[in-house]
Amino acid sequence: MRFPGNRIPQHYFPVEERPKRLRNISDQEAPGGSTYVVGLDQLIVDLEVICGRDLLDRFQIPHGESVVLSDDRFDTLKEYITANQQIHTVTAGGAVGNTLNNYTFLSGERAYLLGAIDDVIHTGSFAFRYINDTPRAVALDHCVPRHGHIATAITFVTPDGERSFAVNMGIANSFPPEAIPAGLVEHSAGVLLTAFCLRDPEAPIYEAAISLMKLAKAAQVPVIFSLGTSSLVREKQAYFRDILQRYVTCAAMNNEEALALTNHSDTLLACNDILDLVDIVVITEGAKGLTMAGFTDDKFKRPTDAAIRSKGIENYNAWEYSRLMRKRVCEKPIKIFSHIHPYLGGPQKVVNTNGAGDAAIAAILHDIAANKYHRNRLPDSEKHKGDFLTYSSLARNAQYANRVAYQVLLSASPRLDGQLPDDTPLQKEET
Image 1: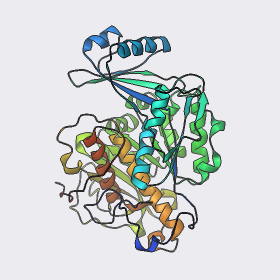
Image 2: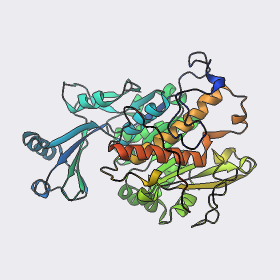
Image 3: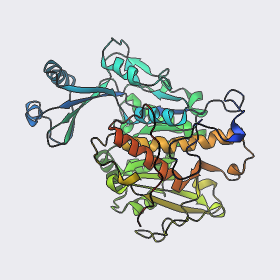
Image 4: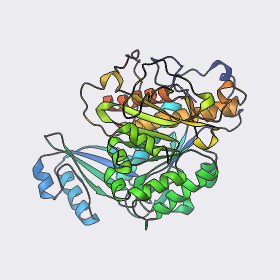
């Protein structure tokens, strides 16, 4: 396990070197073994097409919107853009797939991806590309083969910079609940899934998602749940609030999804509302940065040394240096909040925002897993005098998530890869 920063502000990516007390302890010798995470996803391949508005009109794709196409319509569209050589890139996608990729990159640990994939895979096929783009650290051993083809999303980029989407679900929803590896889930550091898995109550993946969350909750494994799309949340607001309250440890979303879930346009007030349902909230706000909130026990609270701020909640960041805990384990739970502006103001030019939120979740998942890793190996450490969920403070998690999201925006790719750059010292935020 690479730890999430070496406790000084300019380091946001995990350090290569283990803490001194851990250097002589191997994963094989230590209790608990590998610190892995498990994710359930609608496996999907992303195609990017650079085109004019005429192509959208030809195939009746609403400009700037997303539409699900039948097999026949999608096959006709795919044949046309292939014949006209308009496909710009073909990459593995999916919110959970992207997040697990980035978790393994940051932590140096393993992840297991659950989903449905083609039973017959040909060289050059979309399923082949998906496997080829998935790092070895993300294990596909528990994916289920199904007759048909992997889900495909075509992103149309028009000259105005707008993105429009055509999606064919293929076999994405056919992962059954009986395929969930219970033992693997129960010993994991966290499980991850999205609201998309719960869109269709008739689909096998719906029951699989519910089963996964029930298994994790019973084993006290943190459940990280990404809302995914504001329209779906708005349509089923009461349902998703109930799901969050029943099963979820950490809810992640953007500000539009937070508004759809809570009816609050103020992000801090939305966080405050969602903390009545879950233990941790993460809301990405685009150019405004990122807001996180959660709980700590009053006896473990730590004051910030940053300027105290007030917005929708007075003195909201007063205890942001505290580590996060589940509400139910606190003798006297208090809500804590932190907000951070985009790292270094954000990239000068943002080509593609795809995956920034997933990258932030990967960072937080890494910090949660690092806490389990450290607790398994040094249970008597001062770090574990309380039943904490995270290795780092709320403020440090916000900084780390913000930094990783910046890297994804900078590279215009949802998946971290290659050599990490040297960090620039943190610039003090404006109040």
